[in-house]
Image 1: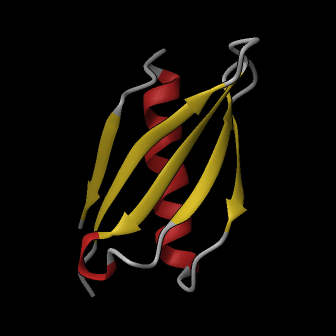
Image 2 (image 1 turned 135 degrees about the vertical axis):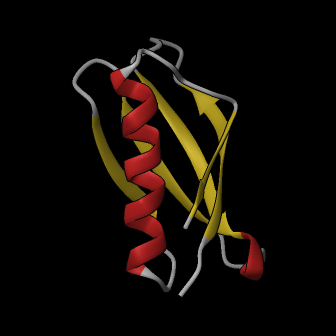
Image 3 (image 1 turned 45 degrees about the horizontal axis):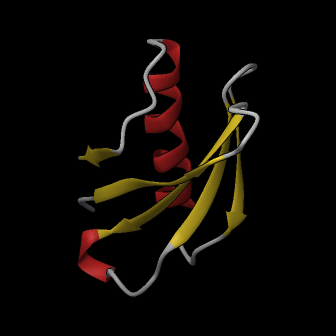
Length: 80
């Protein structure tokens, strides 16, 4: 099964320690989830889950790959 997942920055906290991203598979744009990234310790948690655990885990993985490089992009994507 192929995935094309978009991850878009929603909001950063005022203290600048967390950032929220919205994510979805481009084939199912109406099914959107939200994840939270702790910028200090690199933890990702799903705030609004979607039906597919595979999509949620890949969205977190992509955000964490950027976190490891010190990046917090406005938009990221996972394609496989």
